Image: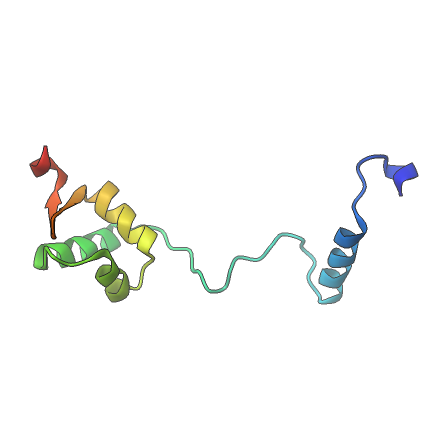
Length: 100
């Protein structure tokens, strides 16, 4: 193979792995998305649900929002800090405009 392809050849372990993938019936070499993690886009409805939870209880934690709405902690953090502009002061969520 080196004579034909030069320095751009695959190592034996990659060839064996690809062969195994093709034998299992897969025709694409791209890795599948992790089945345990569903990719969700932040929607206006999701933002309003988080906002309603915070307005109802200023002492709610990110973990509680995560468990109630079944969205990832990263998504909750992004909504709280980037979309709603909330900051945690002591134990309460305060809109960013009031903390300046």
